[in-house]
Length: 181
Image (cartoon, rainbow, N blue to C red):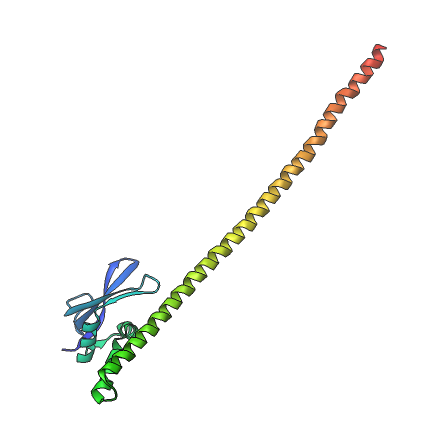
């Protein structure tokens, strides 16, 4: 039986997540499977992978062929690195303790890279928010300035009208007082 490690689609329309399964290569995508070894959620940033490392390593060592996406997932989780190190132990290139030390060093390096990536994304998000706030403040200041200019213009226009209105009755009163004399 040709065995594959592949993804089985789950979730709703527009929000897919996947189960990582061991299945016969002739079985349909969402059909029967031999074993479920993990899940993969590409909707998060970075994508979330929950994998039973030991079972995945066992199936890779037995000869199960992963699909391209699953190969990338397994490689990112270190299954292929561990397989490579186990091959070195079998050939006598180094001891099991040294292989474990190399694997832990690789894993630590991988984690620090992910943490750096997350930190950069958070910093970029903060910078974007700051830029948006600065732009919004400038726009609000411009609107407030334009509104203040408009109100000042209304006051200057309304002030001369009132003075003209007050002067006009005074002009009509003077001729009456002249007529009364």
